[in-house]
Image (tube, rainbow, N blue to C red; front, side, top):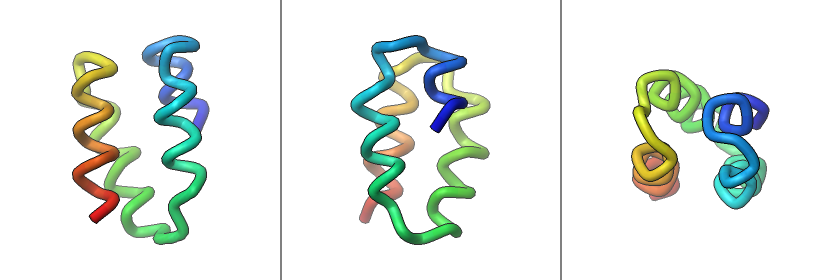
Length: 53
């Protein structure tokens, strides 16, 4: 997911891989929309991990 790298740099690689493993397009769309408003890599992590359930 290029958005994570663009917003948070190379440190986001682990989160990028988590998103790539998702198969539910609805969840991916929700994650993308919420990452736009995440203020930190930690907030992005919470967004991604809360949507994996």
